[in-house]
Amino acid sequence: MTPDGTLNRAAPTQSGVQPEIEDPSLGLVRQAETEVRPPDVDLDLEPEQELLTINMGPHHPATHGVLRLIVTLQGEQVIDLKPVIGYVHTGIEKSCEQHSYWKVIPFVERMDYLGYFFNMEAYCGCVESLLALEIPPRAKWLRTLHMELNRIHSHLVWLGTSALDLGAISMFWYCFRERDRILDLFEMSAGQRMHTRYFQVGGVFEDIPVGFEQKVKEFCAEMPDRISQYEALLDQNEIFLRRTKGIGIVPRERLLELGVTGPLLRAAGEPWDLRKATDYLAYPELDFNIPVGTVGDGYDRYRCRVAEMRESVRMIEQCIDGLPEGPWIADDRKIVLPPRDELSTSMEALIHHFKLVTEGFRVPPGELYHSIEGPRGELGCFIVADGSAKPGRVHFRDSSFVNLQAFREMSVGGYVADLIQNLAMLDPILGGIDR
Amino acid sequence: MPDAPGLELIAQRINEEVPGAVTETAHDHGRATLVVDPEKVLGALGWLRETDGQRYTFLSSLHAADYLPAVPRFAVHYELLNRDRVERVHVKALLPDPGAGNGNGDSALPEIDSCVEMFPTADFQEREVYDMFGIVFRGHPDMRRILMPEDYVGWPQRRDFPVGGEPVIFTHNEPELPHWYE
Image 1 (cartoon, one colour):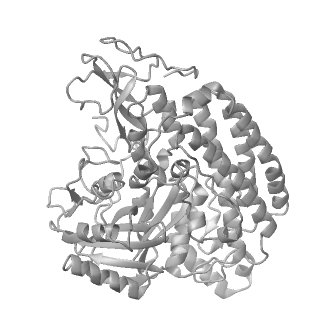
Image 2 (spheres, each protein chain N blue to C red):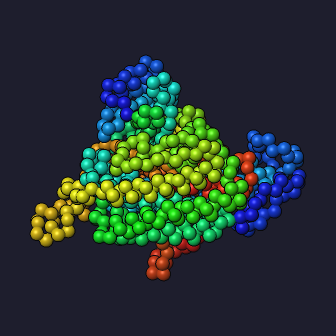
Image 3 (cartoon, rainbow over the protein chains, first blue to last red):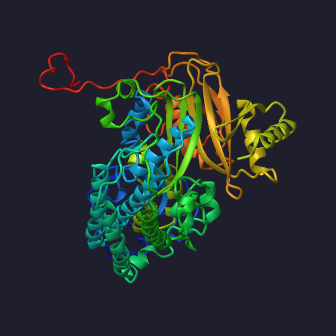
């Protein structure tokens, strides 16, 4: 653990000498000698070398949230690792069952708090499929536009905090500068910077305001240069390269067995992306590539995500250019709120408005699993509709939750410093893991 | 997704291999569903995974639902995916509630075989199902709670589990909750 980012590749400590714990948050829990199973890697160490079990987190800045890791160390090498989760479990799935369908949207947004547009799309898309409701083309393109902006936003937060974990503090400021511009765009179109509740069942809440397209174009014109600047800062940084290259490799087949999806899987060379594999929203009409890595180490994961940001910029430009005219929300008065101006003239609109706001719309009985490609992999939403105005069950297959299972295999056998790097490149969002 | 005749064919072939495994098929919302006998779920999953021409090797998601007051009450859902053909099959194992109990954890729990051996990705997800619904997965290597505290009592995602909460202490209601600090 070197908070200042200097290389920590010293040889494992000599026999009997415990590694010095510099970071006060890594409290010494206990020294286990017998409980831990023997290492399955050849560490070439003295047999009497003691094993040390330490507790990292839950409030450790490098765990990207409240993730607790019980790490067994031999010298400075990780022998075993056990993630303990649930510290921010708030029972969102249970709460969703208590609210009508349209009131669930703000709940699900707050699961994976960096991918709120994706959560909304997974949920709304699922409800729309259950209702067999077709959404207008403009809504599809607006959703795609916002989701790709959100993908850049999510990757920027990942890049900034991950580089921070590896000691590159300036990356954090640069990434958050661009992130703020995306949040400004969200504020302009949806009125909120985060957790916008912009997607509705049936389309989007409101059309984009005048000047939004211009702002997005300005952003898209600038962003490739910014990404080049990030790369210039990191790609030739020896500390960054030596801490990421060749670290945390898990074979592609094993990643698939573990259910890992998203940039982690693509970095290992598997070109699997639901945006290409399935057709939802405007993705079939967009021209974009899927970046894949070769080795699957930390550096490939970084390269994949940065390349994805470039592709997302391209997609946003295409969304702005190809944005069709027309309504932005479906015209089904049993599901979608009537336009505000009709309320003062039309009795029927008033009745519909009242029914929708007080009771909500009913969804015919059925159950469906709907999955999209989120910033961290397959994001699935499973809804059981029982015919009432409230869902019988809402479950999110959060990609961070499933991807976290690969963390142990990434880290065992490596150094503690590599564990931090692996966690950073895993990009877990604890709000999504714990829900 | 296999079309309706294809799904019937799959169901028939599974039943030839594992008699009585598939009890029902359904095709709605553009999705193929196989309802399987919970005792034979591993046979059905294994057939879908291993058979040439099927190869549903990727388990996208494993989750459960409580259909109270329906009987059987629970269901464990497996979302299988063939990545080459981009086909999904939804396998649903309906589980009766042996306790028909109070939901407080002291009644008998429904059990089903764990598929961790076949799909290692199911590890956390089966633990989550156990945590939330009290469905025990036989043969799971580490059947513990995952999101709730380990000493928690009850299965919070069951439909008969009340939405509760802890009283929040403010100055005005502190006298109403004597010994809240104990």
